[in-house]
Image (tube, rainbow, N blue to C red; front, side, top):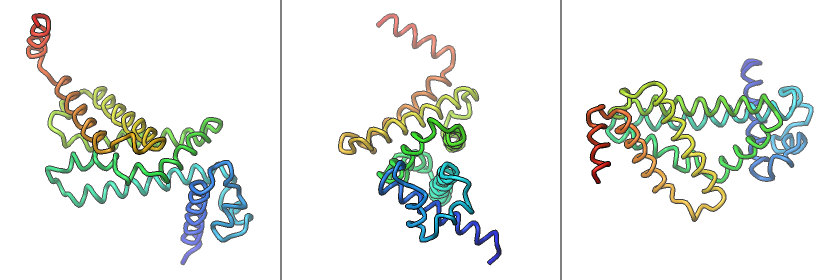
Length: 215
């Protein structure tokens, strides 16, 4: 095994140890020493591979985001153009693959850390940008989506991310008060409604407005 492979393996080991520390005790208590203990290495080893704890946070966000996106892509590839692919794709973002106590708690801790660190904030921003782009690519399979303007496509992706993040936060605070199944169904209805309204012909829109005035 080459030096680069060993370095990558050791960095991954440290990132996974950091994640487990944050999940078990929270970010504030996840010190360099505790991360090192969890990874089974000396604290000096962490300093050899990472300049500081903030760099570990940045790399951890990227690492676990990659894992989630890979899992999503594998599920979509398995469907191979199935008619259920659109529904299954949106279903994934409301599944335990993206909303669970560990992942959600970890990313919330990272978001708090980003308040006072521009590099971590930028990493979080890149995560959301990647999320929006993935949603746009996925919704291209839906009838009518490609008829939307680029601005409307972006706005729809922003809305879906906002719904996901809001539902995720509420579920994390009180999971028995939130139905992820209902959240999925509502999101799909809103997506279809948005596309239908935005792609409605001017004539039909005018007829709808006139009908509304009469009623």
